[in-house]
Length: 349
Length: 171
Image 1 (cartoon, rainbow over the protein chains, first blue to last red):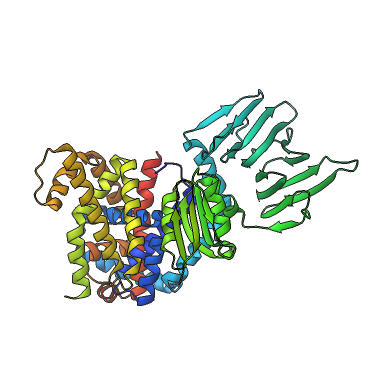
Image 2: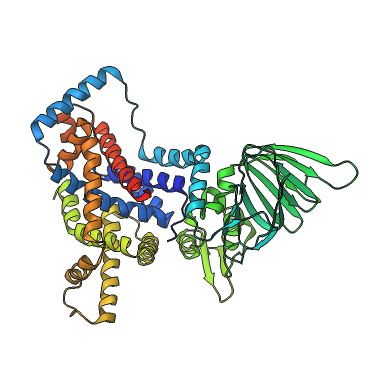
């Protein structure tokens, strides 16, 4: 397992694991809870890992408590008094059911974007394949199936996905990155004197200090803002058009697209940069497309209706095996492996 | 056998093998990832078995079986130890080479320090759970709180211990 992890997501998984662990020690699980726990485990190898890790932690706590040699009666008496005192001061919120919390935790991850930014900075430090690029022009081509964290001279970071091609030119007046193909997420350091410009085809995306993603696929360009604001400038024609985008907004720019601003879940949209693919009810077609960016052995969906089938789970982007095993586990899907691809089709009744 | 006794028995049975599993985890991340993935695959394959009575015990059993198989294979390759009881051998082989005793002791120390800093209600709950093996209802009666609060205290205590370990690793 790679040391590069999305810290926030990881923490949310730990919180979920802890709740289940504590719940198991309370007494019999209800039939519904048993099912929920199993489907929680089955929805991600990382859930399994986190749960097993808790057993280890709990073992250490047992030893820790034992070695502290706490004297029972005085401790219990003080605890009773402290609880009685606090009861008069704070009303503690009633405990939600584990199932509700489970959902709440996934939702929380998304709300905690500002923290994500900090964690991204940390990831950048952890990333093993990290380079510092200086003022000179440099071209980066990310090999198929790989990702790169590119630390730029001003502290900004570009996360480039599989097959992306970037040209970096840092000057005194501006910071320019040309995205020739593929997908990249930019975490931009604030510098009002030197705008950060991403050039994509006939378009300039201008930012001062913000976080946004650009995806260039054939002649369709998708821009998603995670944090702050950007300005999109179309250089084509006599009257260049401009478009302002703020956090959580996305625009698709192509010959046939309407230039309409769409609202998106920015954290989920940029999950690839954290080496995780998170899907809490996303269409199978979208999820498969994300996995296929990172593999030579793509998943092919044989049935159009199946593309809209919604699934839920958390996987590492390079852990295709686990994802395919997860698909095989679903009741209405059949998986067939050939030398070239993995074929997914509806299960015959 | 009561439910609680069952859990404790399972706990006692699995504790050693599981801890060995995790020490190994720390020694080699690659092996650990493979083992976890194997546990995951087997959980998925179990889907046909509709009613798993105790899913947690099931998970522990799967993890333990995989660990055992892993060790048996490693053993056959090295041919150093005669293959008698695979479970016993699993413990014999993994124990000395795994997560160093120093590392383990340091982590226990960190957890201990985290517990030491907790307030009395949290400490009391931990002592009742780990030293006396009391159920949440029994603890609730003795501390005069409701049962769900006992769970909350336990949960918060676990999170604090984990945070402490995380901070140590980040240093």
